[in-house]
Length: 240
Ligand code: HEM
View (spheres, rainbow, N blue to C red):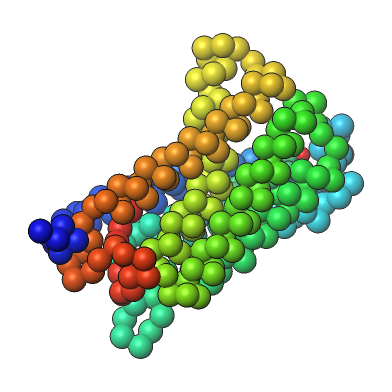
């Protein structure tokens, strides 16, 4: 029996919003931290803690608006009905995707720029620098691979690469989720534990994404669609 032909039970309308709501909640802390940093930069108060941002403001002025837009707009790409277009009109998913790909690239590239050229603040060491270079470069590579896949009309691969890129971005929110219990149970972070916790957030976020990608690949497709490579259709199989 071809399990791909089994009609897939669609999530209830309310359940469809769980994922984007959770993603936006996770984004809140880094977005608020970024807003605070931009306000500080606008206010002109230079301190030893923020001097690096004043010395070279361009990357941080690119980074904070692009990461904010990427995380918030990207969260809505997980709502299946928004992926469907009306006849003759581009879907929300397509329009948002055209904004998200360059925004995500600018977010990651400006992060890499700061990682390479900013002086390391007291709790950031060489290990964190290496992790930022690895995961920041991976985010760039995943967005490019997702773009190449969609140009080849391979929508399944496209969504997988874009989910992975988003996982690297949303890990900035996961950092709070892993760091707060650490501080409560172990105590203040050190240079090493901070790097390991940030690295763990990236690994955790990518592991959860791989789990959903794997589960989706094994599961039944929506009625009339299969999950083979290159499968095209108005609605991508939902990751929810
Ligand atoms: C897309 C999700 C991301 C969000 C929400 C985010 C958020 C932020 C925020 C709010 C800041 C300002 C920190 C402060 O004011 O002290 C910042 C700085 C920075 N980000 Fe990101 N970021 C993201 C992605 C990345 C990536 C992928 C990299 C990897 C290279 C990166 C590297 C950096 C670096 C190096 C800094 C400067 C850190 C410092 O000198 O204190 N970011 N990010």
